[in-house]
Image (cartoon, rainbow, N blue to C red; front, side):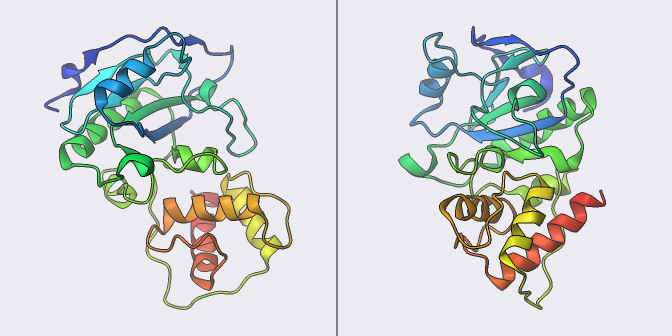
Length: 240
């Protein structure tokens, strides 16, 4: 994308006013999870579907604007982060064309990532979104969503100045109490349950954490390596 001026207008009717007094402090990334860009655009602009996003970026780098940033797009669904539940009210949503886990999940091409970098930098220049609040859909809805998934290159995005990527966890693995892990995940922002043993909800949160922060270890279990990574991410976010 040679510049933000190349954005293609594809308006969606699916939006409403942001609540008074609610600032924009989250950039939320998704994949479309559909078989083509046009199918995704059709759905995101269909009034009966009642879903939308502010932007969609195709795999070839073309960028579509569907909802003005001043308006609340309908992309997060039932979600929460750091106790806030109306994520749509406080976020900008970007959809990345990718068939997703259902239709043949694949890597995100360089042109798409380059466009995302340019667009995200422009958005961050307009809104006070801290690096700790550049999030995945799976972060805010771990029991429902997997996107943008383990093939999304968060580390590369962070090197471009967008979001956060801590250094690799130390080789020394760590064992922490399960309830302590849930507490740390909750303080990071996840809707972690107050469980002392593994549950379906706890596994969903652990898997979402792994998709975001350690995508080579999608066990959904509190392994020593996951425990060490939780502590590292917690330290970076709390002290950011």
